[in-house]
Structure formats: C-alpha cells, structure tokens
Image (cartoon, rainbow, N blue to C red; front, top):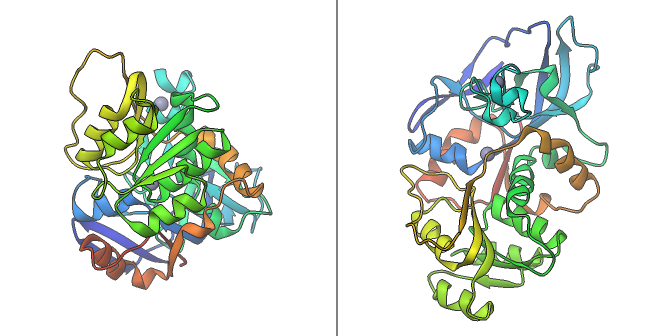
Length: 333
Ligand SMILES: [Zn+2]
Ligand SMILES: [Zn+2]
C-alpha cells in the first residue's frame, strides 16, 4: 500500500509498504479521507516528539476492507471511523472508564501507525460506524468536535455565560459552534481575518484580532469589568495561554487544548481559577458523529484544501514554512 512515513522533523516520504497484518480482533480499513490536524504540523516541525518511523494521521474515515476472525460486528464495505486512543483495558484508569488516561495508551499517529495511507488497522472495539447523513470528508473531521465536547465537560458553562476562545483554527471554530449550540456568548480571538469571518458566520458574538485590539481591555469592557466565565486556549501559543489566564473572572476556568513545545502554565494568583489540560476522549466520537448527522455542527466549511497522498509532503512543508495558509486539509488516498 502507499503510505506517508514520518522519519523525524521535516523528514517525511511517500513509500510503498506491506498491508498491515490483521489480528483476530482487528479491522482493516481502506482510508477514504483523512484530515491534517495542527498537531501533525507540530510533529512535522519537531515541536512534538513521536515514535519514528511512523505514519501520521489520527482523524479519518473509510470503509471496512477485511476483519479478523473474531470480529462479528462489521461487514465489508461498511462506512466507519476509528477513534485515536489505543488502550489496555486493564489498568487503573481503564477500569475507571478513563481510557484516554490509560497507563499503556498508544495514540494513532503518535505511537501506532495512522491514516495517511491507503489502509489503516484498528481494534474492532475502537471502530465506529458513520451515520448515512455524514460524508467521508465530514467524518474525517471528528476529532475537533470530540475536543470541543470534552471542553464542555470541564467548562460546564450555563446559558448566558461568556466563553473566550483563543485561536479560530479547526478546533476553535468547532468550539465556537458547540458553545453557541449550548447558549453561550462567544468572544472569538484570532489574528487571521478569514478565520474571524468564519467564526462570525458560526455565531460568535464578538471577534477580536489580538494584534489590533487590547484583548484584556476589550474583554473586561464586554464583561462589566469582571472577566469571562471560561476561556478555551486552542492556539498553542504562549501569549494566548497567558492572556486566557488573565481574562477569566475569579473562579473562572481555562481549558487548554492547543499543543506546542515547552508551553508554560499561568502564574499563581490565588483567585480560585481552574485550569484543565483537555485530552481527546474516545467516548465522545459517537456524539460528535450524531451532531454532524443532524447538521448541528458544520465542518465542511472548514475545508480549504483537498489533496492526494503524493501532495502531502509539499503541503506540510508549505504550511510549516508559512508559505501556505489553510484551515482544514483533507487527504484522499
Ligand atoms: Zn488532532
Ligand atoms: Zn489502560
């Protein structure tokens, strides 16, 4: 099969690889669409370390090609995705149902081969059928929804509260939509005009360019001098982490979603602020797919590029060097 193999920072190649070997409880999936995540770009540029060599790609959709002998739940050609968390099922956290914290966890595209390939393998228990109303392209952009839903678990905002969302990339833009679905007032922050425009289209109540406005000042004005109830940091920049921690009210919450190298937490201020590092939750994928099927969330409008496997290396270079601008890129093997 054709696969894009990552060997180390800036070193990724399209190669011919043998088909992954199918275990008794596993499903072989023919990839129809996979999306590039901000995290993949961090890995490519060397900001985040992964086990190498590895096939990246952790958000994808496809059809069942073959199943191991003990798999009864899936048929050939069934439309599916697989969540990205491989877990042991036996450790303390797994027994508590917190599989994303598994002591032996291995994430797709981080420790086990991912979906920038013609085929990918996943344990049957991690494979989820795609509703008929959801296209392969949409189903390949499930993880941002999963993250946004996980954020809501921790933020627990109530109707009328205000959420500031730093970064309006795919995760921030989906977070904006989910927050609006929940009746939350949204202040969306991003330096890129096109992204703020998308945020506005998704219902953001206020949009701010951090290079043109004083974010702290403006947010305080918008919240009667008190600060927002919660802030989501989805940009992965240190400035945004510091600002997000600054603009929340006393007792407010900051949810960290953005990734990057050497990011530091906020300075202690004794204001009973709550800080949470949010991690992908495998049990949110079915709800994410349901919201897509019901057209409650729009991920289609995020897609700015559709490419083949052969174009992926050039695209990663272009994005990491800043020559190319994209919101979401969908790869079709
Ligand atoms: Zn991701
Ligand atoms: Zn475990």
